[in-house]
Figure 1 (cartoon, rainbow, N blue to C red):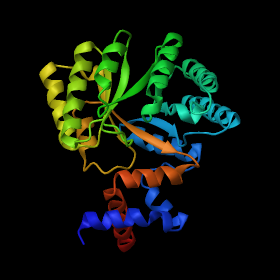
Figure 2: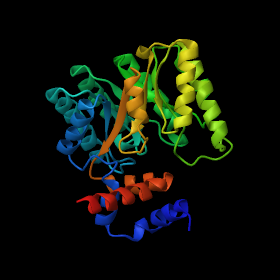
Figure 3: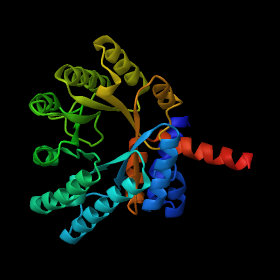
Figure 4: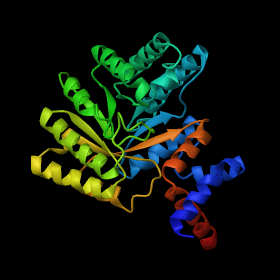
Length: 305
């Protein structure tokens, strides 16, 4: 069996393994269940020169009370970040605030979080989820931007519509995260070929730079990062116009440190919370090599100690 086949076997077995064992694998890229654990991770990242964005794990809440509790948690998180003096902003998913059950509930919850961002002079990123929520998420972003300028959103390079969305969004000051896209979408609306997705990623990046947007370049694809760096050099884009982003714990073979050494801002997406299990299963299914990587490091650690 090949190493990649072994990784896929591990991932296929995860739903049948004890939760504690999955937790050992997940610990590599989930910053714990509590705010205290997450803030400690951010502190360490800041000390290493990285910025952070915190995300409370969860999505698709089913009841209004859940959405309200999530909003309370994000309001508190902004205060905790400010009190700790950490370099971190916040990313959140609209369905975690009730978008899937009631748009008004989501808007009310988001408004409270936005007020906390303004009061603590921090930034808020509205994550993009799968395609049924794209239009509503764009509408939420525009509403937020009318209240507070330090808010951004996400565009996904595999969606055919993203170029038009980017054109329409650049009529206002724009700060957005550019990623490839992780949700399974039909070929009618999304590019399926990896090379074609990467090509469109670079097209969107160039469009954004030429339009004056601030771009959070979010990918773990090191050849694509190198192409983005080359585009930055060609267009003479100053470091104040972009940052690189990566998920906490994803192995990058020193690339993130190299970007820091080049004078670029690098932000780590730090997820945490009680909903770590479902998140972990999803991430491992998307990136089977992570399971083998983490297990390998676990066994190496045990041999050393």
